Image 1: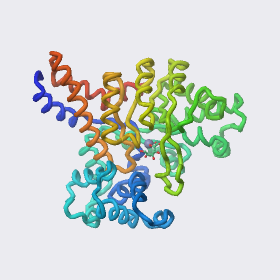
Image 2: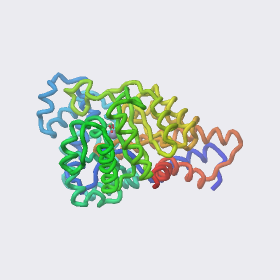
Image 3: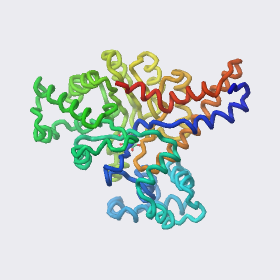
Image 4: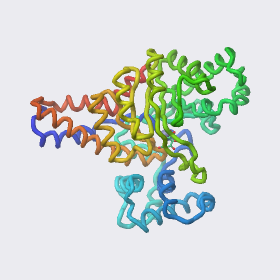
Length: 415
Ligand code: FIX
Ligand code: ZN
């Protein structure tokens, strides 16, 4: 079908964006076989760390008293403070409303027990299906930490890849940031490693990485980094990256995903909500892309200021895939600005969003809100093409949108 007017565009584009299935490349979700690691339901939704941070903007309850409460009581506190005593206007608060509305719950009742009742009568199997259908998700990528004992048990039983909608990625924060502490663990698993990064140790770490990539069928290897991240660097982390992670990713032909700019635990009382943001230096990204042209790098940064430099760097290096509006950037005004800028600099050659969902239900709101913004950005950009006299086809728009929501990632990780 040919599209020649903006009215036609405004009818068709939202349909295409809604109907395009999403591959969500970074979440903290797990398949059902991971048991309690998979968070879902109203109490997990309300105790999301984005919301606990916002709760403490208003509450006088001491941190330790709040975190000592059972989850349901924490959720009650957050509901009362953020939803009943004031209007839920922040993005994370609005997200809860989008989820409840989409699930068909009555927002006028504001009755938490009624919402709990809904979740009590649905099975997790049915709920996964319901959420994936509502958000039109094809698959999500988990964040898999080889040092997490609960996860390990699932992988050791061969149950980690049971549901093909949940793909794996190997997360290396623990290895890269706490190498000295994990030496005894690696030794217990039969790896001949020492604190001296000699040839044997480096070879054994490469063997460890290869083993886990194969074991979990990792689509990529990832890690988060502080604002001070630097490379090349004569540090344990720098050497592990250049002498182990990068060579193994090259051999396996999978990307190394870097999430840069998180300042961990600036207020440790907040637990999972304790982390903040700092300015990211893009020079290490430029260095890696140039020094390792046969490697693939996926990069997202946490601060607004580095977004432009990162997009420009991607223009210079085809082995760099920019992705997502991470965490504190996952807010409509910032997503809109960043997505427009990336489109203008990179065309279709980037991945606009990942959800970072920690609670299954969040897939609904994170993607509904992101789809709305993508619709606005592409309405404006396709509108410019129509103004220029370029005609469009529905099938062409379908192809373009598919690249952003699915194909760019799948092609980039293809072995
Ligand atoms: O490091 C990460 O993957 C971060 O996304 C998370 O640790 C963070 O807590 C989060 O959930 C952000 O959205
Ligand atoms: Zn994350």
